[in-house]
Image 1 (spheres, one colour):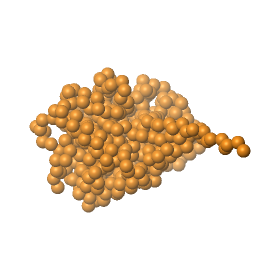
Image 2 (cartoon, one colour):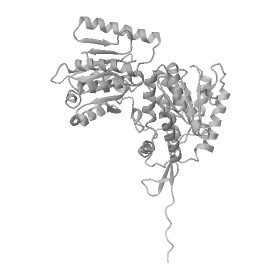
Image 3 (cartoon, rainbow, N blue to C red):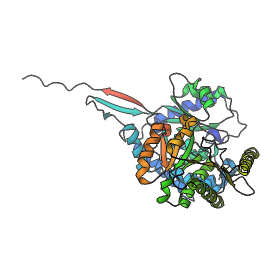
Image 4 (cartoon, helix red, strand yellow):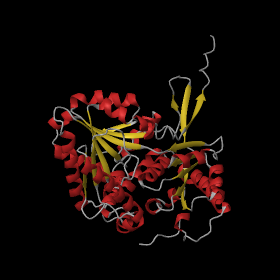
Length: 460
């Protein structure tokens, strides 16, 4: 299956992109939005997106088939990892989930369609999305770009997606699958790729956009922030890290093997490439001082089993060398001290588990390289992670039912924006508050209509 050159991202790599071409694309998107997107109800858009999600979960869907057949070479993820990740995302595109999201963030499912009474009985409100929404998408995972496009459609915005040159394959497939369902709606979406440093092209986007979203490194966001016009809304999602906490008493309700399998699923999802992936697991010691060590060993065995059914993708030589060098460091420490242990895949860099009694937070080199650290309780874990508190995205929590709310409140007070069960770190619900913010609420602008008071009846 070959993709027609419908979007700018479909053009050959040597095709010239000029500021004039980008400007014309933005103007076309704005016109198409008025013709094909604004007149639609949210219910119609939801129905289309639900059908899109169903299609992507069908094994015989041509776009899914292309994603899983050519995806490993294009993205570096294995076929099994791609299939798992695509199923997790597109299973969220249900009518129920999208209606919940509209009610959660906007108060009314039809707030983007018409005016609705406000708290003040003499005032009505209506939400509207940006005329042109510009996304600077990340280069590590497809999910953030997929999610951004879905949100943009829900708020009836024309969208221009500037894809990373290394990560345009899957967003292109999504755009073409949307076009196969509804060409007019797809005419409100544009995708393009170009090498970094093309400020002449980016400046056109920044000038034409009503709202800009960017996900990436903090320095990239800082540079872009200085160039965005003061009248343009900027939604930035910078560097984030995640970790897990396993309370000792959890082992009374869940087996060690089950806990390890859930943790391994978090490490393996998208090969640990996203902000939601765990760098380490803090494990409470409890009465059994060896519980964290036994968990680390069980996690290593679970990752080894998972490698046979969901193998990690092939790494560039430089990344593999980085993992090998860090393994060597911990192998030396393990040989010299009883406070460090190392488990790793034989004859490959497919997975690595490092057990360290030093509790300070340690950034992993990722690609299924994870730390396990014992702590006396959650308070000690949070003190050890204080250096990255402002950058935390998600904490996976495994605890007995009686303790979960207490620990969740402790994490919330510390500043964690998302807490989830172990095994679901890379599967946030469609309704989640990304970095603690409302997904649709950040995009829309409200119009308040202050109505005339009812006239008094004429005096008799």
